[in-house]
Image (tube, rainbow, N blue to C red; front, side, top):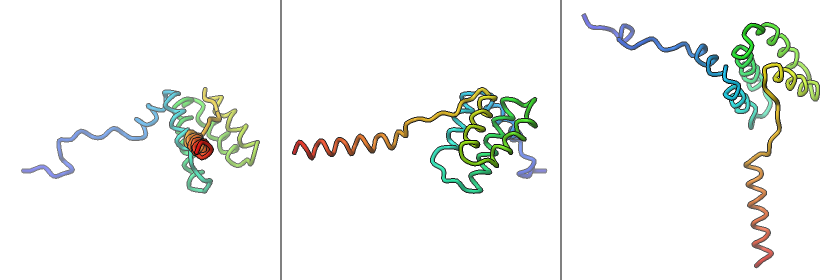
Length: 125
């Protein structure tokens, strides 16, 4: 009797969510994961939901014993506007051992450097 595809000898795959949460237990990995979700996105309902999911995954990984409280606080923060939302998120992340930061946009900086180089070439010509 031959085996069907569902009866193959392949090992069952590792549950994606469990392995994802395990990786997010590394705070440096969690920070990069959130940075990717925050970078280069225009606000929309879909992206807001993805951001909430990403933040929730990080909370699940870093503070599993306090997940219910962190989830409720995150939900309240996501309803806020402006500076209340920004400072609320910063405090929420601090509770996870993470920090909300601002950095120079590398692509923007390179563009300005190229513009300045062009201006210098035009002046020299």
